[in-house]
Amino acid sequence: MSGPIKHVVMWRVHGETAEQRAAARRKVQAAFEGLRGRIEGLRSIEVGVNITDVDHACDVVLITEFSNLAGLQSYATHPEHLRVRRELGDLRTARFQVDYAIGSAGPGLGEAEARELSPEAMAD
Image (cartoon, rainbow, N blue to C red):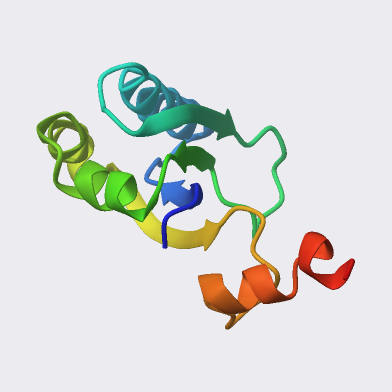
């Protein structure tokens, strides 16, 4: 897969009180925002902190975009990313992740199939 990849991760964090949970959210946000401009292939990074008290919501979301799958794979083992993971330790209680090709034609389709079904290909 050679096109851009979106990497979305959501976490729940520890905290006995609302203040502790808010501090944990801010720590996760600051740690990941600190990666901006430090990892080749990481085209964009956005960190959102949940503002509601909905009990089924996650606390923090990370939305990153990589040039390609190789960039995402490199990020996973990059020393700066590993440093952030160590720094946050067991602060996170749950983690959810989705990685997907930007502009893909649909689930289960490979790159070749996506090209075959693209609007440009269908114009003939």
